[in-house]
Length: 119
Image (cartoon, rainbow, N blue to C red; front, side):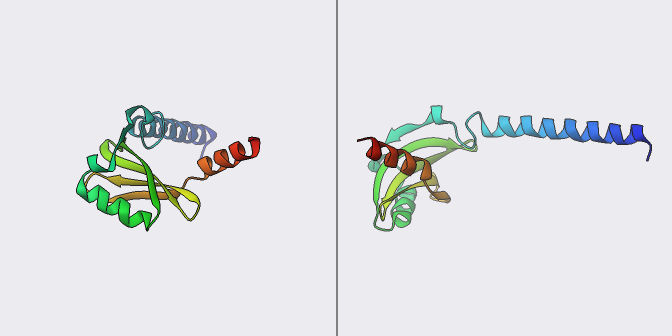
């Protein structure tokens, strides 16, 4: 393949990746998969029954500390901070009760540890 063809192929590929990145940022918003500006703190009695059921199940006896209504991929979802076995978890549930993600909130754990050390 001539050198010009390789250069054209590389340029085209780079342009396609750049466009895909822009489209991805549009889809996900500035803050990744959800937009923190749209978060609104709610009480457990304000969440749909399906969300409450899923959060309670995923908390597995842990303490649900805070619940926020947010947007996840353009749809309403609820994100809860849950303390289980001394660790903070972030649980995200779609308004129909579908579990979207459950992950250890290591960032807040590290922040809490730093604050404890500073005190």
